[in-house]
Structure formats: C-alpha cells, structure tokens
Length: 253
Ligand code: 1GP
Image 1 (cartoon, rainbow, N blue to C red):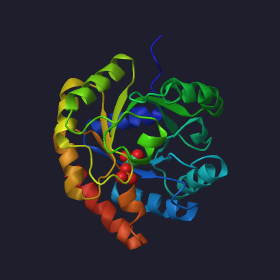
Image 2 (image 1 turned 90 degrees about the vertical axis):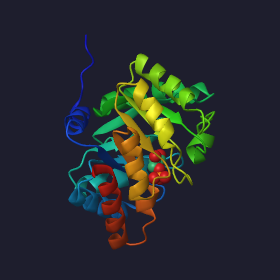
Image 3 (image 1 turned 120 degrees about the horizontal axis):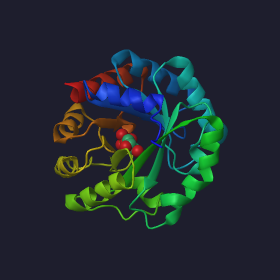
Image 4 (image 1 turned 135 degrees about the vertical axis):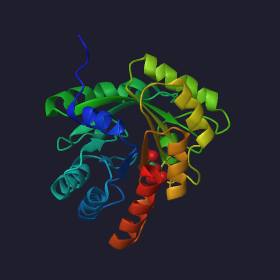
C-alpha cells in the first residue's frame, strides 16, 4: 500500500512546481497568541506559504494550543507543527513535521518521542509529514536539547550522507537546521552539496535574517526557507511586515 499524501504535503508539492517557498516559524514560548495571529495575518498578505509552530522549550499544552488557534483565526495559511518532542502536538494544527533528529546521539529524539506522540497524531487527525531533521553547527538550543552531534560547517558531505540516509529511510523532506537565532545560517556550499545528492524537497533554516541570506539559500538549492527570529524580533507590526517582505523577495526573487 502506498503512503497517502495529505492535503498540506500536496499543497507544498503543487506550489514547488512554480516557486520556492517561505515558511514562517513562530515559537509559542516567544510570542503570545495575539502577536502570533498578527504575524500570520501579515504573512498571508505578503505571500508567505505556511506557518510552522514549535520550539525546543515550553511550546506545549495550552500555550501551544492558544498560539495555533490564534493563527488559525487570523489566516488561512496551513499550520504545520514543528515539535521539540511529543509534547509539541496540538489538535488545532493542520499538519505536523513528523521528524527524526537523525544526528542526535539520544534515541529519544530519533524514535522515542515519535513513538510517544504517534497515537495522538492519529487520534487528532493531524497530517504527518515525515522529515529528516539535521542539526548543523552552531545548533543553538535545539542542538543542545536534542543531544545532537552538530554537523561541522565545513563538512558538507556528512550532511549529504545523513540527508540521503533519511531519504532512503522513507522521509519525504530533509531539513538543514543551524538552530533558531544562530549567528550564521547553514553555509550555502553545504546546501548545494546536499541538493545534488537528494531528490526530496530541501528545507533550510536557522540564522536567516536578511533577504540576501534567504536568496543565497535558494540559489544554493533550498526549496523551502524557514525564518523565525528575524520576524519575531522585529519590534513592531510594521517592522515585521517590512522584514517579511524583504525575506520573501529574497526567496521568491
Ligand atoms: C529554527 O530554522 C528555524 O528552527 C528558524 O530559525 O529563528 O534563526 O530564523 P531562526
């Protein structure tokens, strides 16, 4: 039996036929529901493609539900959970990156949290999107919390080997993550080497603050660019809009 591709994953594939995509990540530990709703609304207006919701610390329970609901009320963009563990599941989201942190040294982050969360994803009817998640230096909080052995920035072949292993294990997306708030994004040279090796869509995030950095990721071969901190820290709604426009232009050209 073939795996059933859900609505959100089909939407991503359809859009990728025409353009590169921009996902905005909101961490419920950093933004309140009202701010999250406001950012989601602007995101939709300017042509962002989806909202991801999650974080490594505290993005759980009522706090997570409140942010997901506020986003759903303010925009019609797909909402995709980006969980730090099985705690990061909300019944109000459309989909979940059902991800395995392949370069963790702790089996909890490779298969353990996934097993603990699987029944809840099924019960709530959230669309699972299988994804290989790879932490690149510096890795930031998610690298530390996830017991990752971050891939050295100057070793793109290690990233490519893990990414291909993820694809061969059946994962339908690969995510190269420098860590939220990283002072440098994943090097474009690494993105390019991984792009050459894998066939599944490649997501790149962590430390992308400018349109130029977002454009560099796309030119190197990223299909989806994720931005979070740059927008969350914009300071005001108007600044957030400007920042989102700049990042979106970098990605969509
Ligand atoms: C983190 O890749 C995302 O998981 C986004 O990172 O917050 O640095 O944009 P930033």
